[in-house]
Length: 158
Image 1 (cartoon, one colour):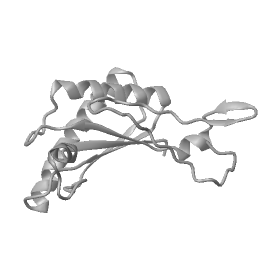
Image 2: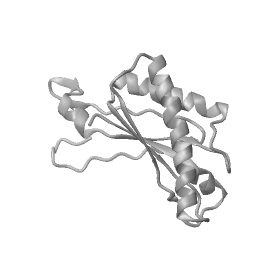
Image 3: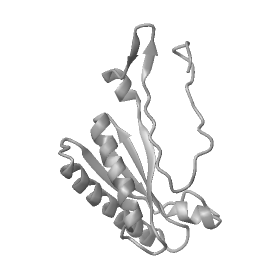
Image 4: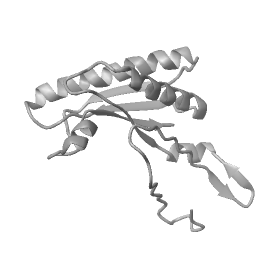
């Protein structure tokens, strides 16, 4: 994307569709070829909005299982070592109730992801589940309310 090593690298993906799961892989390329060196791995964090929950639910519906399985396969394939799950919710109610609700959703995803990783024979991955009680959108429309009920996944090599 840039020959200048100090250049700010960013990329925008257009045409993405809702209810689809996308994977991106970043590699360093120079005259010698391409690589994903240990140094490059440490610099790459991949953020994935893994699941959205139905209103008032803390259990995953069957469509979410596939997304979680794909994420587990991705963790195995690229040998990520740390997964941070962060749950969000819609505004309203007390912070304590929102935090409790988002923690329950996030733990649901963490437990399922742990089982999937175990099934795939993946070990040595740290999974951290955070329920924030926070909203991504403060005055959400209908589509944003659904996104507010999501669990985001940050995959790192750290």
